Length: 178
Image (cartoon, rainbow, N blue to C red; front, side, top):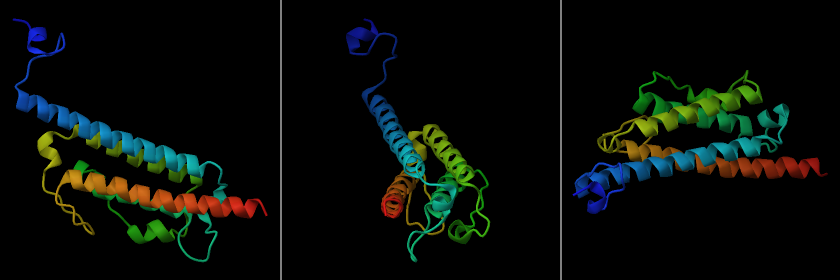
């Protein structure tokens, strides 16, 4: 009896149901997270596009953060929580500098560093086995207990700051239209 008769597509080895379910779950988790991080990164790029280098680093309000400092913050967040703690990149975070860098990079340099951090996250996601996702996790400033929780938390954190970036764009657009 061939694998097609067992319900497997041609050319695919037969796996016991439990192993196939774990494989399917790993593939699903990886796909969902990859799609979310890719969409988040694209949204950050889309929102940054209309801003000049000066607008990228200036705050349109006396409170809050600039768009650029949010990009530095997201970059530091990903490089620390996923890079240093899961991928073991050796990254050392300087969180206060993410918000108050006295000599920030250009807009394009900041966005390239962000893109590099997202690429590292995607590579790390794809490298995780089912056992890796449930591996114990610890990092400063988080209560995530395993890798999956931390990677999901970082994606949600990106969404939160994307909301702030949208608000900053509305502010800059309204100033341009005056």
